Image 1 (cartoon, one colour):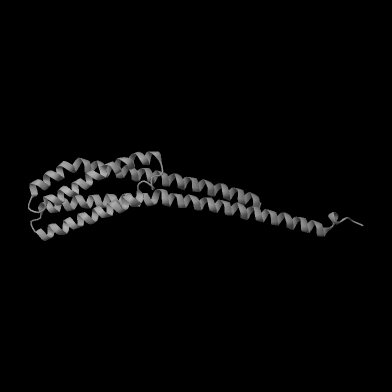
Image 2 (tube, rainbow, N blue to C red; image 1 turned 135 degrees about the horizontal axis):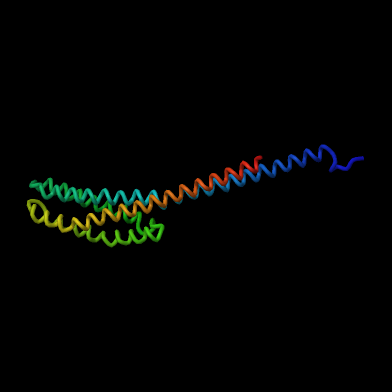
Length: 196
């Protein structure tokens, strides 16, 4: 009489058991790879995409403030000036919201921290500019032009710092993408090996 280990039934059970173990290994490894890819996507979104959105909101509002200040310098109608000044205050509120969403919790690297600290230090100058433009008011084109000229270099430096910060975040997003691709290819290769 043959022992159970030499029967066809045992061999079928053994092969099925090995298949179940390999299937579980492929499944587990796939879940692990997907979880890692999901983490990269989440980190890229919160660590790079959202900061870029916030920084672009700050940039757009800052440029709109500069445009409205130039408009005020050319306007002679008090109600039009008041509309532009309200727009400037709205832009300043947009900057405050976007900046508080970004800084300091959205800063994720040492290089980004250096640029973000410089931007944070430059924000009071922007608020001073808004205060001076609002105080000058309508019908005072020479004073407004002097204010605009005096703050021109600081505004340009502010815009350049935002551009640097955006580039840092774009580079970070690219690194996350490369890491995700690496994890994908490694996971695919191991899963195919396990299947084979």
